[in-house]
Length: 117
Length: 111
Image: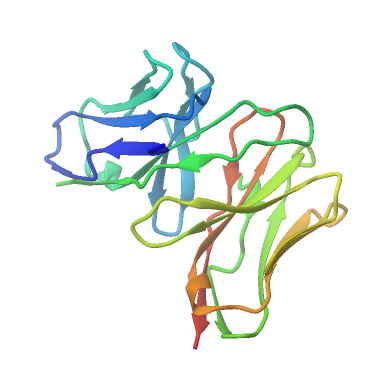
């Protein structure tokens, strides 16, 4: 199993350009997430999905869009990149939990380092 | 408003000694807590977790303690090893809502 993979690993954009980050998981997980990590800010949730065809906003959704057309893929789009979106982006996935006081581990991808000039 | 707080951005510990990383939370509805470890240029990896109905969980050198009345949890690493040098994130969850992460603590274990 490859686990969670992210494409690309690095990218440099100019302000105003658009791009799509791809996340793929081969564990048949229902839930998928996109985070950004900035120095001193920890991991902040951008958008997430609880199943194929569903998406929901997280803590910092502005400037991003997502789609989950297939269960194994979760795409993060930047329509018009801004320097404030320079960050490291992590995708994660997990199975639905079994019930109260239980939790299934969330697996992370290796990250995409994005620089917006 | 931060629901999960890690008030120490960094911690240095001598090899072989105990490392104690702390985490406070404000949401009394959290029912599960986790610690993730992150090396540079890698994604976070799960380390250890604890349900809110327990007060301790141990896995080898790693032990997590939960004090619900104080809304506080801690991660103990004994003995600390240079390979433990990483950023540690505390996280909490309520039901099937997304994990809420703290800002992380950078642990340096000095040989």
